[in-house]
Image 1 (spheres, rainbow, N blue to C red):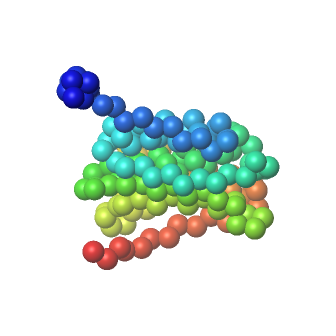
Image 2: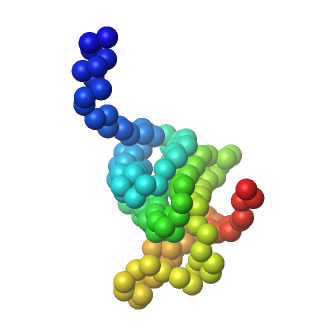
Image 3: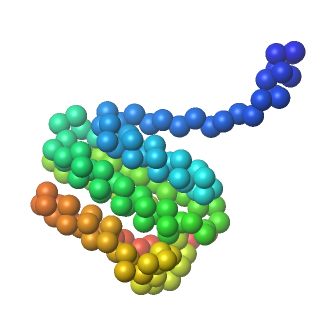
Length: 146
């Protein structure tokens, strides 16, 4: 009983480390998770990256980093905000899905950046990198019913 009482005096910190087997993705997701946590956003990760993934580390970093930056920006002012990351291989394709909660209208037309000239640079970088690997890039907007 005494140990339990003494334990209660120390604040408990939430520890996060998700190991995918890909050091680049692990590092990016760790950094973005800390950013999400500091903003009160829940980051959910469900990754299954194949060992023989052909995406170069710098390209993977660009894709994941830019998509998570966009999701963090979109979710920043939301109540009960979340971001969900899913990476998995489906047959010979690597599927990367980032979902977030954003209730703003015309999401593609708005930016919260101070310098409006920087709007969509990361998004366009992701499109370019995905196409470099003969991949498809799409954005799906959907409404979740309460």
